[in-house]
Length: 566
Image (cartoon, rainbow, N blue to C red):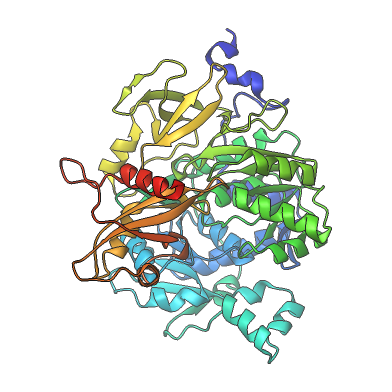
């Protein structure tokens, strides 16, 4: 039987990419152990120039697992991680996995309100946190406060020279130090050093299985309620294998991955914390994306592979051209989380001589399910074709059991070994999203060509993509309505030229109240992470509503676009 008959997209795969990956047999723990055995002297992590070899990483994970076990962590317990990219983040992630615990990743820039909502869902027994947010977690009510809070100090992982400079009694050093570390005030906070130096595990703990839960990854819905997507070792290891297979010229043991994407995001987690280790790559960690910091790293350790978002590619291409820094070491780059403009592709490929393609996914698919081929048959403007071992369907969004004819716009369904197992303690949401037969409803409206290329044309869900992150309109609206002068609010995403969206709020003021966009924005900042705060606030006399009283966000968005055009 001709495989192209059922999967015509295989003809567009880059040379060497298989139509199916071998069913995975390794858990994430096995994957790390394998890398330690294969590449013991190879550097695994780099942070401001300080390096950790794979042998050292394996030893650190073993000791941290012992420390977590002494804190009472057992298989199935939730371990919350609230850290920027740093070596301690990688060690904590794999140490929890070694015990069979479930890692719950969090954005360290979230407000107390946002973090509290998520802790109310997962009830972690231990939280490993950036020292700057340790007091925030310590202030949680007793019913959700973890039994142990472990504080990580970022400078501890930096080279001694950098640590010394941060201690200098000058204003710039004080400002830099204050931006990356803070001494917790709350009592009972456990320093990371006590966990990390606990000694070896001694007797081996029961190893997790492929179908055990590895991660709860939060995703926002249009309701704003936090949902923890259940991702197993099989899900995450499969997506790492699919991602590695997608780039056929990856050289195991000889790649340099730049982790400018946050590891707490599904995209960064899979490409920079699992795929990279599966091929024995050096992971260069950045606590945040900063052009100057990245240029310094490029001069020191040239990257070969960069997963990122379009604004980062644009910023680096412009900066390296301006500073005379070569980008020619970068052979491959995969963009995700927002649309990739053709101009960005052209600028990047001119600067690097390598290839930049767009991929597609969502947290619930670990996250990647579709990608443009890493070769001449890629098509800019589409998100590509199904990954190996991945199937797709296009269905009527109002009746997902009804498949549509080729070329018709409909909702994309995805099935494969990377598709999640449901939402933590939310069976109704799971039933709405995960259909019989393992088909995942993406909520995206797409068209598919005869040879399998997917183009996203609209979203059923009203999520906004800001800086590569999903923003729930309902959550932002709830924060705006805490302002006593705001009577009604609708939040939408207004498209930008770089492929992202601007979080924009339309508000109706209470009678007698004065509209002040700046004051409304600043008021919402106390309740929202920075990327969720509306960049623009516009006054409306009233908001368009349906016959049942629901705000019609699409009409609000259209009205805002008309204002911009006028």
